[in-house]
Length: 110
Image (cartoon, rainbow, N blue to C red):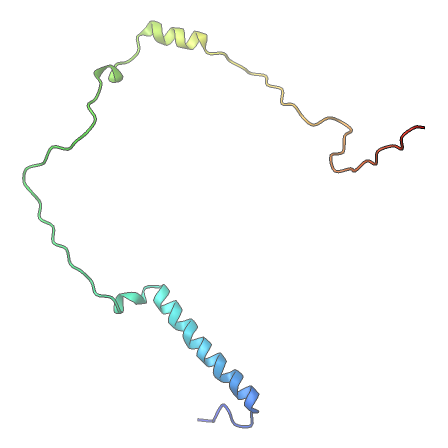
């Protein structure tokens, strides 16, 4: 194999060495970033045992009135009092006004 530093000045040799070291660091960081840390870390095993009887959980009691359907008169009242707006006019900018223009104030009158 040919020597990569043959015929190079010391400045060029140092640049080649730095480029190789940075390349190794880049490959190492990519290896660690994309799942290489499993090799260096210890894994902990957790065993889970299922209990045959479920435990009561603390939950908010359900109000039975929340589950009731509203009556037909309540539904009709709600439908009849909801306003329907089919035509909405959106305000736009004032015509003929340039908001980016800078106008010099007029000179005061004597």
